[in-house]
Length: 291
Image 1 (cartoon, rainbow, N blue to C red):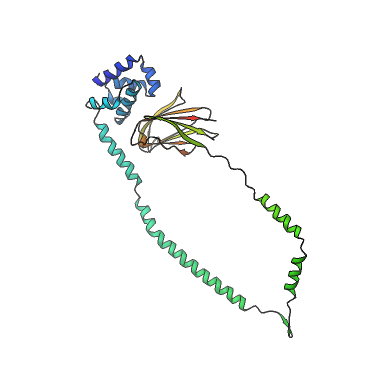
Image 2 (cartoon, rainbow, N blue to C red):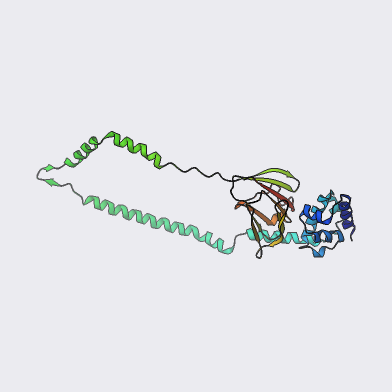
């Protein structure tokens, strides 16, 4: 057992907490909590989770995690700090444009110019044909008189129309254009924040579907506040996402081991972190569903 593990164990026992009770509080599996106390970091799901799990353990038993990290930095595997830049570099590389996209952007202006030229030629041709057709038309004449009776008849017909018919038609048009009332959009708002713990409230929704997506590799735990639903390491390209329908529940508690690589969607709406992921890597997100 390391000195750090002994300090954490004594703090847990001083609070009268068993490993099972601590597992329920932190949502970290009991075997990982025991591994932290024994200094056995090799059994963790990934070395970069060591720091995250120790931080959650320390906060649960009332210790300052940053002070522990500084005093016992030699006990924590240094490879955690080496893996982080490598993970971030892969995220940055995905954001850059691919060569195929650059080629499309280069060709696009030429395509638009070609379409414009073809459209201009078609418009000129249409105007030429239209003008040629107008020149061939001549008014019908008999001897020296020109017939202009038809326009006069048209004016007489317009005068004979009943004004009430036009008013009725004008009154009927608004009824046809009445739009159906819009369904109010759901509201997902932050109602409280304390350290790495943020509480959201979901209103105006008939469903409560949580989708968690990994952009690299991240450990995630989901519960309804009293019962664990799943605890899993999500890896991009393998099991990169997990979707759960909690429409029959009133709460969702999400433990995130690596926030920069984790996206959360509530009914297909992306949740915006109240605490920036690069400032606090491990976060606990609670969503209260108001039906």
